[in-house]
Length: 392
Image (cartoon, rainbow, N blue to C red; front, side, top):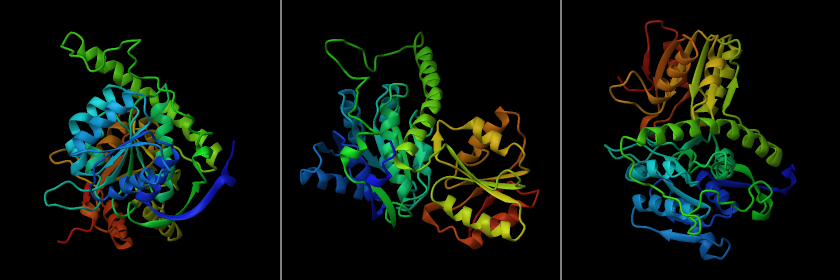
């Protein structure tokens, strides 16, 4: 059912949009610890609970480690569960990230992307998203405030689906999206959402009448088989995620897919990007096209599971692929997204020229002038890595 007539137009920042999505999802448990730039999310949710608008348990914990630990328990008890964090907060959760996924919880977590210390920085890098990339969580990237709202609703549907049962992260760039006000459409009330996201059917729930062991000790004679089962189950989620994207389009009128592409089919140079910078790159690509440059841009809405086959297929005929990383992996061949793209191309027998562009670390603005410099540098066949906008 298309319910576009049951939406209202508001101006919200990204944090508020995520809070409204969790509110509209009618969550049962919110475990929260404040950290910039996501604090507004849990503040708004605490107001919904305090005002009696949301019938949920709000657990104010003493650390991010406890926030995710409480979320694990709540999810396994059958509750629709939400939390949020950023940067150092996710680092403190790190032990529990792997536990939450291997126990097949359905937690949804918003991640206000922020650089890791040191030096201390509260602005955007994708360090935290990449730190969680191997932990078995589904990861979505929002490009704007509307997507932050929509993807949070989609994440609940995905994680709770019995064909998925893995926790989800919704990434939104710190300050660029978390604190920027944009116009967006949200649904009128929680009852509308129930058509897309009905009351949770807790498939993986602790039930004393049907005992199951959670988190047992597994020594070498069993551990590897368990991990292979988890790996196969995680890979298979991509099919259901695509289906849920389609269901949300029918429900909301807004279309989502793992990839978005612009002017890629005949491009000589394609830029691959995550998050809010995708909008800037689309603007620049349109400008360059008017000047006769055969360029395109590919952005990813779904980062984990990585859409390897789709990425390779889209890029198969491109001469030069410039992969833009808002982070850096020290001592590696390149940034994290760069390595993902390179592995995807290699897996499917595609051998493009790859360039890694490191940009925007610690929230540094990515300007049109920087984009021009990146384009010009990428045309030099000897260049394989560019640090965009670094003062010489």
